Image 1: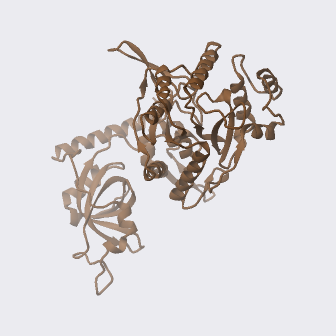
Image 2 (image 1 turned 135 degrees about the vertical axis):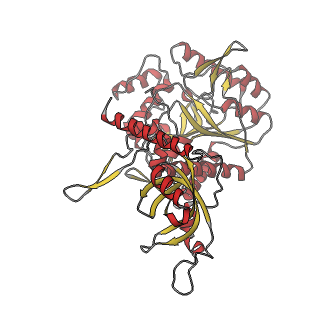
Length: 515
């Protein structure tokens, strides 16, 4: 056993002994409830409402000051003789607490607070607010309540001055992998992490409100699907015992939402957990979140306007500006965003115009560009690889790449004026796709032919090609109006809006290899 493991084990044992001592004293170390009236931020942001000064000496008028009841973790302690200070951390921040033996009682102070309370323990405090001589807003405790004993010590960073007089931090909980595995600790000791997830929630709520205000209905569709579809990806497979049938975790909810458009809804959306059996990277997690929206009687041009308006709104809500700092870049979400046809974007970066090239010609160009390709790749896959290697990473400001080759888009409507293309766009930002949208294909004959082409590609080795969904074909045979649809990657958008380097930084519990 290492020295660290031994030390932690000893601390663990000491805390277990304190736990038993609390019980022996008749104190329940894990009570059932506590009445919280205020949070730290409420008090700190409105200190003048809580501090009533005496008329004669400018000190706090204790008798007339409003009482507060707060609860949280003890994060620092300055234990002295008859009075002490400690820091209490709740869900909104931290606040200093002053505790005195004469106020809370001799036993409560000497036997419980001074001897049995450790960093990380949950406590409840009732008292009044005052300012110390240094001007710090502080709660003067009149009652002290034990609310939860921690038996495993939290990491406690220590700051010391080195020989050069510089401040050096030791024992910070900063190891990325450990932080992802033990997010519960990360959230406690690294408060800035909680801010990231609050911003993510604010982002999602802003998007939800934006769609609700326009009359679109939030719905739910199946996660377990007998036939997966709506995207090009490998699925996770599971088995239903009662029905003795294999099912798939959805890779997208597109085909179910379109069924609802067939059924008569004008606009439906869903924030969905989707699953794709793919590798892990800074931008990929096998379980991810996206929102898909489908609106009847609209096309992809309308959807571009809609998206840039919504994401501009998100930036303003989160940052008070359309400009967002992401790494070394400043990204501006102010409308309108550039709109560049895909073939034009590729030609600008490679010098090759692929618009009139055959599959074999494009395969030769890919080799000339030193792009790793496989024999089973069709024309659409080859173009996608070229775009990914030469164009996507260079698009830092939000940009719509439009008008994709038909081979890349089996669910999009053929372009109304450009042969061989479909009405599709992807929104690219900070070098990665954040959204994918179409004028949706609603011609059942054309859709069947596209599915059959996907089946051919699958038979030739493309295991990400789509399968034929006969029930979806039947649904649009009953008639589907012109429709615009979009899928927006919530995790990637959250990375940008919170200036996070990895998708794992915006997921509470990312998938990890076993310890």
